[in-house]
Length: 97
Ligand SMILES: [Zn+2]
Image (cartoon, rainbow, N blue to C red; front, side, top):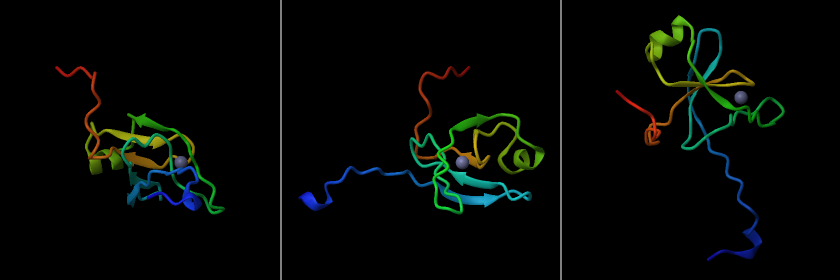
């Protein structure tokens, strides 16, 4: 099946889905499955690739929109907000009482 001409390594970047933005222009996106780094490109087409960190202390506007205890992530570089991917199974090993 594979054509040698196209046998280059596939570096597939998971694509996040744009969800909207906050009133201050902060972008909100939904993570692709197993996505760990920001896939946003800047004006020059360069990939941000900042790490997505769990975001706990978000402003009231965000809490109103997604709930006060929403699972949110934020890119450490461009500060884009990422929602968890719904296809992703809940992280195992998390204690729930
Ligand atoms: Zn970013």
